[in-house]
Image (cartoon, rainbow, N blue to C red):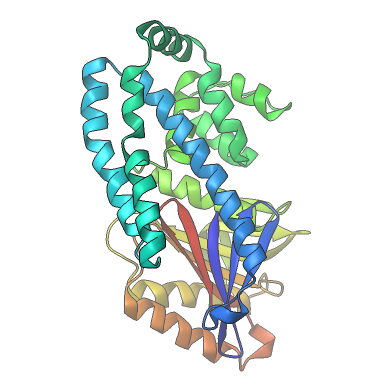
Length: 329
């Protein structure tokens, strides 16, 4: 899921990307009167369903904890839910806000019902989740993870993986470590000190943007200057490069210097012999963007519009709150 914006004639238009091959146009960012309410409601239904799925996963995981650990977790979790509810009603009218908060107070304490489950039910469900290897498999297979990422994670975890077959069969052929890693990366959206998990998610996102295209990792592409650029992610269609992408997964937000370096790489590749069909350069970040970096990219992108022969769209993809927010310059 992601909310993206595209600029046209100085106006920003907002889109909601629900998944692979499904994008909803929401309307102009600056004029709420022209927002397509039906599409916004459809997007909200999609988000609500995903939130429900996450809540059910949380419930199952909580039941796997010992009573002591469960109490510790829920003691911390309940105030978080209440804080979320409070922040969600900031734009409501006073009368509606009061009704919402009344329901919110009930919802905030809902997790405590887990404590009241019959001991036999808790025990049976915990044993079932631990013993049944399908637990991770069933949640992972709903995420449409690209095959090349499944293959890479299997390799990183020294896991077996059948070459062909249904996604469920391929996941079942993996070892527990590989399935748990897929779960941590795509379901829990965890991060690791080296930024590897964030890069996995970025790869999956780029793959969803270019459905049925060839995704290449660490591709070496020569530029017009003669320099060989090692591109973390390159996209090919019919044998031609159509996009290049890289992601900053740890450290400080993307700086002005890094933005310029990215632009220069895209520009050099575009002007080289392999850049005839290059249409997009995507700079991703899991650590945010410095304000100067975004301003610089916008200015550099504007300068390219005068050169129709070497026109390439620049995009930023910022991962925050489990979704990518994409802006086209």
